[in-house]
Image (cartoon, rainbow, N blue to C red):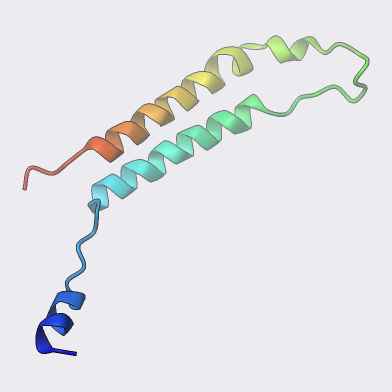
Length: 83
């Protein structure tokens, strides 16, 4: 190995900055929270109708949280420092 290859291998440039990764984690947390709120609450007997599937948690809150999470993810990928 030459001296230049050792110097170049020590310099690893990350694709994203720390802020990007933090925003990505926040976006994933929103998506997972939406999925948790979307699931569950099923009937014990599959032949009995459970009207709880139409509550506002499943129809409004969970999809909204998931949509916010996806928007945060897109912003986290597109955000670039002014440096």
